[in-house]
Image 1 (cartoon, one colour):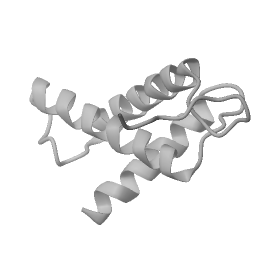
Image 2 (spheres, rainbow, N blue to C red):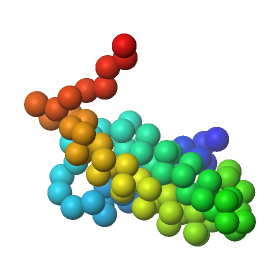
Image 3 (spheres, rainbow, N blue to C red):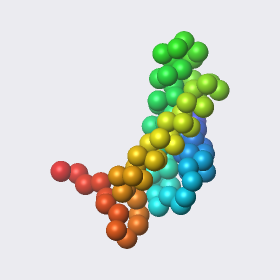
Length: 92
């Protein structure tokens, strides 16, 4: 579980490095993006038969980074983050 969180953080940080511009998100958002990206990467790797969903291999890692970049771009486009005029997620 700790390895999954560490891998998620690394994937999230790589996604932030690869996406041009400054992202106004904190460490928790970065971690969340990385964990979601790693779940997507593991699922895709499992679907094509190159590994288990909980086992992040090279193909799954690459897909995870790509998924995290896409999720970060979507989040930025939606206006989520810590800027002064940014929207925040609300629980209803």
